[in-house]
Amino acid sequence: MTPKTDKPYWWEAAEPQVADGGPLPEKADVVIVGGGYAGMGAAIPLARAGRDVIVLERDRPGDGASSRNGGLTSANIRWSYSKLKAKFGEDAAKAYYAEGVAARADLKDFVETEKLDCDLSMVGRFTGAMRPEILDSMKREAEIMQRELGIESTVIERKDQYDEIGSELYHGGIRRTDMGGLHPGKMHRELRRVAEESGTKIWGDTGVTNIAQVGTQFDITTPKGTVRANHVIVATNGYTDKGLPWLQKRLVPVISEMIATEPLSPNLMNTLMPRRQMHGETRQLGHYYRPSPDGTQILFGGRRYDDDMNAARERLRNNLTSIFPDLSDVGLSHHWFGFVAFPMDQLPKLTVHKGIIYATGFCGSGVVWARWMGQKAAYQILEREEAETAIGSQPFRAIPFYNGNPWFLPVMMNWYKIKDRFSGTLK
Ligand SMILES: Cc1cc2nc3c(=O)[nH]c(=O)nc-3n(C[C@H](O)[C@H](O)[C@H](O)COP(=O)(O)OP(=O)(O)OC[C@H]3O[C@@H](n4cnc5c(N)ncnc54)[C@H](O)[C@@H]3O)c2cc1C
Image (cartoon, rainbow, N blue to C red; front, side, top):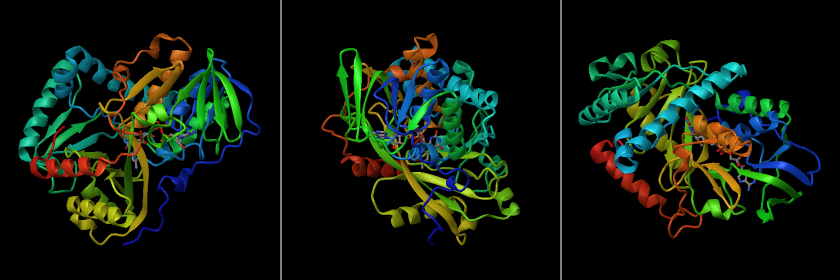
């Protein structure tokens, strides 16, 4: 079944708009490369502190992942707390998870204080266990997180899961009430509005092709001219191109894509998604899904590793109906995709290399992390105490034998598929 459009569902209400700042200035205090959540998150505190800040964006600001995502405000960390503790030690693991809690709270606080019109709702998230033994591991992990971090969650046994989701697929799961969802397109539109109202100037259709250090300053080159700046923040994440070779060698871009069902009846929605909350799964290549903000459609996402759009859509659709067989005859209204980015250690990054600040590597969870790290990048320039980040401070290593073309991705994805099939993977 072909969807009506390959544009994101979110663009119906908030499609990214062009930005024509006029002739490029020769100088700026701060240049931000990339106009998504991270770029806008950096611009706002800088502009509010009176800095002369400009954003240079290759397409329309927001055209990247920031207006295409699922809108789940999870601040996910790809490692479980226990695995993080084993690898980086207890203090680091605690600090990373605490930063996730702080970043989520900061986003909520910012949306409320600034009165952003972005449909943020802390409705909770249910993560379904793919096997009974996975639920046991989830219970143990939940107990440890409660005891050591004070992070609350509720274990849902299979017999009770119909209050969470109308599906037979899962063997119970965990419900978190400190997570929710927002409208990503509206969120980006609002961040851009606040950035511009604070004095940020934005140029769309202005890709950066080179950044060169000149003494203590930088020359940032674009087809429209070169800007000399005191500081540069790079916020290009999954859309990083060859204009940024140092970063390209450190980030793996991965396609994340979504479908939206046609509107469903209130009765069906009440059965399938009784709480109208956010959803995830324990599979490594698991799906994320949610109701549309008006509660009438299901938006369903997953990862892709080849170029075949049609096959990918059918795969997503089949996976949706394996969770909700009632949807087997339902049409799709939208199908779209975007790029997310993974560093080798799968932890978000705030790194300075040769004076350039990089805020990136959000591993498909940048709705919270991208604005947070962008903001931290700004705090570094403003020399504010809050610039510190525990999770973003791990070394940002180059990936061996890699230049930005992820030739190994199909092999990795196939390995994850096998793992998912045989273990139902809990990371
Ligand atoms: C389908 C999908 C679903 C997702 N679901 C979720 C979710 O539910 N929850 C969650 O937390 N996260 C989710 N994500 C991830 C999240 O959207 C991203 O992590 C986040 O938007 C990253 O923001 P960013 O500002 O770092 O990058 P982006 O928004 O991707 O912006 C980067 C920008 O840099 C620009 N750029 C690149 N190179 C240059 C250059 N040389 N010069 C100038 N500009 C350049 C690009 O054009 C782009 O606009 C999802 C992503 C996708 C694609």
